[in-house]
Image (cartoon, rainbow, N blue to C red; front, side, top):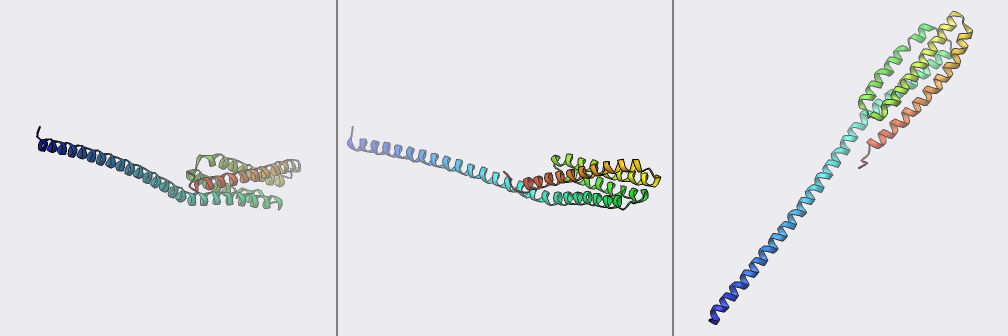
Length: 190
């Protein structure tokens, strides 16, 4: 074989090997770059999802906090006014007027339930039941006073003290649950 021809074949073969190597290197590099970009895009998408979730939770925190505060304030106000009226020997019509406060507490409880989450539902129901018991017992005390039934009045006073303590416990339990929820759902915990 002619040395020029074999040199040409060798040069073409070498160029082919270099070209194939260059093509393979380019393909591997572009594939690695594409995978790296895909990984970066996934990471950015996850960060955007986390940011969106955090912003959503922050937006939910303010209405929840307002609903929880209004419910707690109304529960305490009901306890305080009924207690005051029980101690000052209010008549049954005055005690009956507190049923509006019990109804308002019920409306506020509905708002709290809507704002959620589900963990707050039972503490809200417990406060409502305890508040209703306080009001009803105080109303029965007033009726017993008006009728001059001291035995019934004294028995109901004992029940009233227990009901008031139970309401205090339920209000505290609601407050603790509300704080926990606001802390958990008000910060990015992911």
